[in-house]
Amino acid sequence: MNRDVAESKSSSTSLDVRVRELLSRGRKDLATTRFKEIAIYFALIGCGLFSLLITVSIIGVLLTETLRFFQFDEVTVTNFLGSADWTPLLGETKSFGIWGLISGTLLVTGIAMAFAIPLGLVTAIYLSEYAPRKVRDILKPILEVLAGIPTVVYGFFALMTITPFLQWLHEGFNVYNAMSAGLAVGILCFPTVCSLAEDALQSVPKSLRDGALGLGGTRFDATIKVILPAALSGIISAFLLAVARAIGETMIVALAAGSRPQATIDPRDEIQTMTGFMVQMAGGDVSNFGTEYFSMYAVAFTLFLITLSLTMVGNIVRRRYRETYE
Image 1 (cartoon, one colour):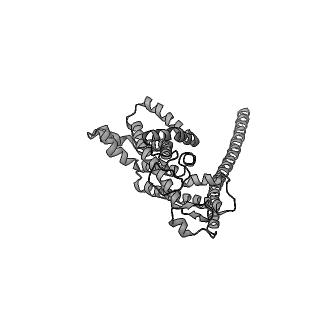
Image 2 (cartoon, helix red, strand yellow):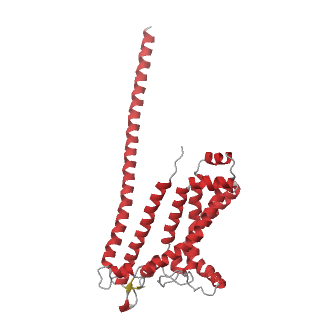
Image 3 (tube, rainbow, N blue to C red):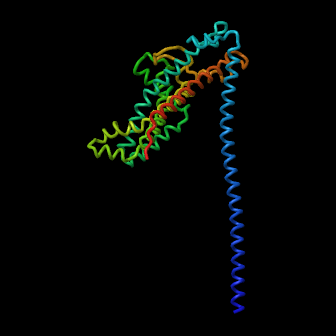
């Protein structure tokens, strides 16, 4: 009897010790987990603040140097915003009319989007709604490869392949022309439009497709009248992202478009874009203290305002046409 009592006391004692050990280990694990969570929390805050700091620093540098550009006697806001004559390297007859560069940028972007948006959307619809799985598994990696090709390769492709073909079609094309650069930029933006639009189409619930087909509609009817409107927010976002990519493209236009800033709508002419001019100025052929050098920052700040406007429009459109499904 006494032995049983002693054994029960011993077992209860060992059980209490184990419980205490488990509680102590649990407290240590909980403290470690809380420390890790706090560390991750502050690390995320630090990353966010770092990104904000970089953005503010970029804007600050662009704004500061742009204000220095307008402090030169030969520069006026009226000439900068109201003229298309951009001749910063002509000695005493310098002119800084930004619309010559904006015109070239918009011309290349328009040509690129006229190529990339229809072709990208049709390809996205085919991959999402019509392509067999095996075909889709082959085409998707090919599109991703196109998106990963360096832009300088596209530039040389435009200069050595697209331009000679255009000159074979029509003798009016210059060696450097807007059409060649625009088509190369369109090829560059095509995978972006196709991939993002296809993701937007894939995100539409299958129940909408089944409902449209159940009501007697064909697959084409379901695609055009149901799926496309439901995915409109994502598709428009893909378009705007492609436009921003085309406006900010550098190497293709620097190699294939030329270096003659002018306000023209003729795609056969040589033009210069804002990014092309910045590449020219960054080459080191001008003084770091001259008007020409600081004009690069004014052009960069203008380009930043354009892309910022596109981003804001994209956010408004996305909120306006966003569809939510449960």
